[in-house]
Image (cartoon, rainbow, N blue to C red; front, side, top):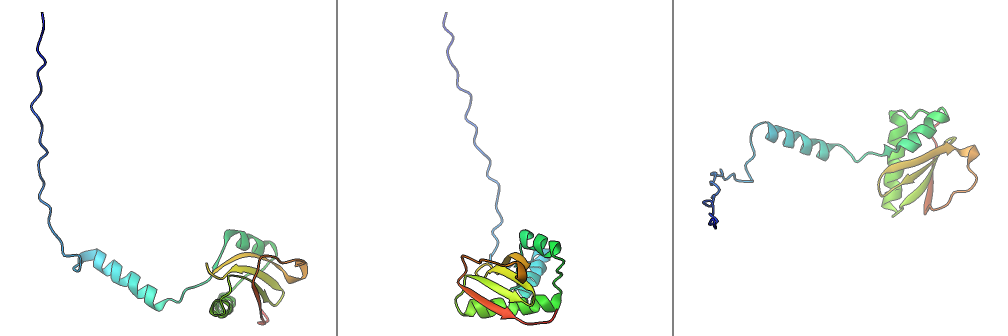
Length: 131
């Protein structure tokens, strides 16, 4: 006795109407968020970040960088960037910082008196600030 194999009726997906939106028109909360983000991008200069490793070294040596220090550091990074530097030694009073100029990030920090050999840098700059 043989039973025939029956196929189930095919199921067709239902089409859901998609509302077409003009990509040039964005409204509502997203519009205000987008405008605010663009405004911050336009007015905020690219700042220098301190890596976790460098932050730990700064704390270990008792250094605290205030807004004026960061401003001087950012100015030094802009100067080095304009000259084509990629990895630099930044001497700031008794502080020595190794920075990735391309990424605008301080990689490590140490007391300048503890610095013996510095490798893998292509430039150096000295900032005098009497912190």
